[in-house]
Amino acid sequence: MATETDERTEPAERTDEEFGDRLIDWRTREQLLQVGLYGTAALMLLFLWVPLLVIVFLSFTESPNLLPFEGFTLYNYTRVPGEADLQSSVVTSFGIATLSATIATAIGVLASFALTRYRFRFRELYRTFGIVPMIIPGVILGVGLRFYFQFLLPVEPGFLATVLTHSLYGLPFVLLIVTARLYTFDESLEEAARDLGADPLTTFRDVTFPVIAPAIAAGFLFAWVRSFEDYIRALFVSGVEVTPLTQWMFGKITKASAENLNLLNSVSTLVVLVIAIALAAAMNYGNVSGYVAGTAHEDEEE
Amino acid sequence: MAAPDRDESLRATLVGALSSDRTGLGVTALPGAVWIALLLLAPLAFMTAVSFVTRDPLTYQIVWEPSLENYRDLFVGGTTEYSLGPVGFQATAFEQAMLLSYAIATVATVLCLVLAFPLAYAMTRLGDRAFKVTIYLVLLPFFTMYLVRAYSWRLMFGGSGVLNQALGAVGVGPVGLFEYGVPAIIVGLTHAYFPYMLITLYASLDGLDFSLVEAARDLGASRVDVVKDHIVPLALPGIIGGSLFVFVPSVGAFITPQILGLGTVQMIGILIERRAIGAASNAPAAGAASVIVVLTIVVALLVVFRYVDLDELGGA
Image 1 (cartoon, rainbow over the protein chains, first blue to last red):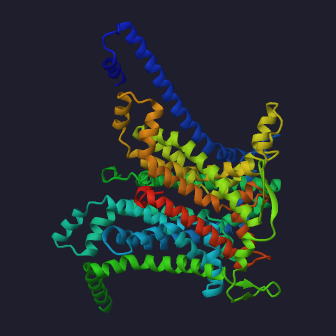
Image 2 (image 1 turned 45 degrees about the vertical axis):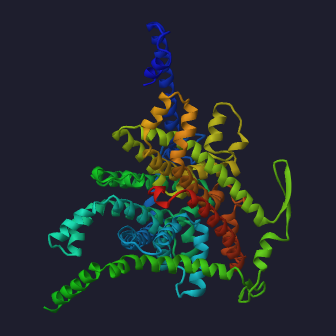
Image 3 (image 1 turned 180 degrees about the vertical axis):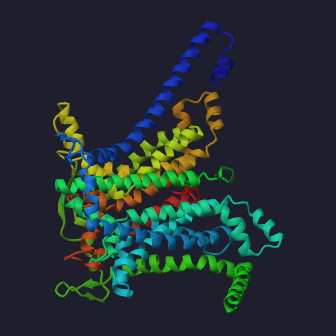
């Protein structure tokens, strides 16, 4: 393309040789830029990954520090099954994440239909406040809900309070992903089903649901992970009895003995591993990457 | 045969309800509206109300009488001399925490933007397979626990952290920059929120028509001009949206300053947490500080929504 430009600007004065030189020049420059762009991109991926790889590496070493290197071991992993506190915190986190993500998904999917299928007066407001729980700093959401539960509602800090808090926190993730899918949904499919005599429930079950199911699954996954990894919101509402995994980990980080850090490294590695597998499965099953990047289109389905 | 009959009539009622626009809207919109009203708006309103009463310093009970004392405490009295580079100024602990949080969040946002742009741009030019691998490599750290990521930088930084040990191994002494503190927090926040920026930027760059870029180049525009005049304006919704997603959580960050500043860097999130939990807890004071932070966020949102529609922010 640029060669054509060059010809147009000063066509008469150019010999083939000069033209060839300019072309090579242009191509080298283009290649250099290309290398620079992809090089920078690769460096960014490295920036994201190096700290995680350091944890993985250190989880297999005797010492929680890089130096002095004292050899490899699996001992840090053999300790995991013996930690009763750790196991109960994992169970707690799984329970909270699963319940809250289920609530967030149910409410979020319904709200997504309201936003995409109906015109109503406070639609923009509804959408905005539906996104706010994701943006508002966790400290503030936590403080607000703590006082609210403490003074106004008969909800003791604990499991239920945490589930409620996280169900609100997960709502925007479901909302964003499912509305994005519904906007690109071809509504004539539903009309056709209704014209053929299907009632709204049947239409939803047989036509709409199969199409938006991957988006719902992606939304659930997002809400689940956000609940599972949350520390700060739960800190304010979980009380002293309920200890999610993040609070267990935070305790180990602040009491940083070599023994604690070794255990923490192996638990962190397991977390990364489980999420790696779940994400790979989710991306294979549905178009998660598309929904995340906001580029899901009907034809990219499956 | 009672149960199937009931199921049938329930089904008939549901079908009837969903066929009407009014009830259809009610069924779909109401649960979300109730949730938002009960768990977001009411708590924030209550927090605001609490911020206008006081706590008895002796009994620790809340005295339900209107007062502006908490706000006065935030901005007046108890000032200390602080210095920001060559500039010295008087500020309360709250003012200093606000200033510090905004400064740190600004640097983290700019870093995310500068770092994410080339990667987002490169991702739009990738083939299907390479794109899938790249997005997986981006999403995995993104989905990994926030706490684990903050902890990973705790291992990297510090006097005997991985970075300084690696430098020591090649003969360069421990570098002060890699100690725990503000630089570590900025790196931690950048790492934590980088994917938000990347995904939002990618979503807006992906819609970009590259034939425009090529046309501009054909017409003799320099690369810098193309970026400045074409790519940036077209990606503006993504830039603003991504900045919002990085900036707002960074301002209120708690885990990152706690873990990477060893609690010595008093960002606003830590200040609020100290006042809300523990022996010295003071709900009205924590409420007042939170209200001010929320107000600054609302202003930021209003500014942003003058320029972009929420729909354009992408599905992050």
